Image (tube, rainbow, N blue to C red; front, side, top):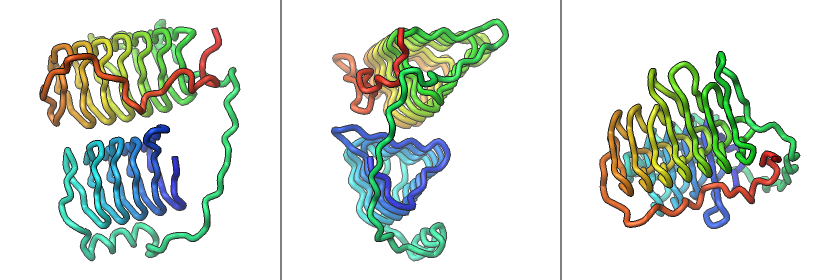
Length: 300
């Protein structure tokens, strides 16, 4: 991943790259709070709005404005000096003189790009005994984490939560199982950066084995069948139920008490079934592989 000079990632923004789709962000670009960039190329002097999602393969030119909550679908190419809005995103127009003035004001009146080269550095590997998440009891309710699960140190888990074998809980994830009910996370589940899981009164939240939840999602007291994939930035409301092998598109909103059958393709705001898979979804390229995280794995 490459982050250009003087670029800014604001609160809870997430940037993820893979060997197949590395992420690069140009210089003096600003990513708003809870924005998500997954395997995309972002130019210089761009403003990415709060909660916007750039999916793998997106190429965003220089001096672009991406509106709040916009979702750029996989492979989309956006030319320089574009204003992009919508779910899915569309080029609304080219930058106006007022837009350029806005970009300039946000950068202290200077739209020039720095000439200084990037300085490479290496991060020290984590020790095997590094902290494994923050676990909190709530009254007499304690989290249980299987010894083979992986929790990043900034993950927070509280109350009546069970995390199964081989699960991966990413950075900034918050899982709350306190007064309202239990949370059950099956084997080999992945919950990635800055996702939030919580409950409503007299409910429970269940993720069956092999579920993948992308960065920046919000899950309220829902039930996801085995092998379901939830793409980044989706919201699943209380009482919703998805069968096994479903696929929820990025930025979708699954309404309260919505029910979808096995292998449903779910998309929209609010979400609807737009198709049916003939087989379980393949793991996305942005999932984490346990073998890539030896320094974070709990030692049995």
